Length: 98
Image 1: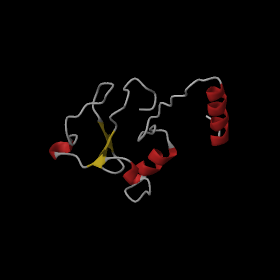
Image 2: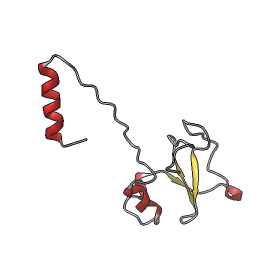
Image 3: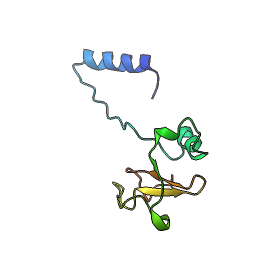
Image 4: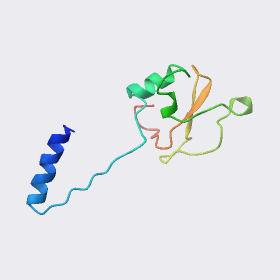
């Protein structure tokens, strides 16, 4: 973590030692505990709602499709407050966030 200035100092120090820095970023992903996601769950009028993928249930209240999460289990979770499912392809069913 840290600031951009911290990162630039790290990068400069690495380069003076002829080291390369590789960044591993998880783009397009936030925790279910992240303030944006929490706000998105509050309602369809949330400014963060479109940051995530939401879908109406199929007939009988079933998930929109049969997609699975990368870590096992279903990729869709029903949100009672909005009556829609949200997509979480990277959800880990053993993780405390869910």
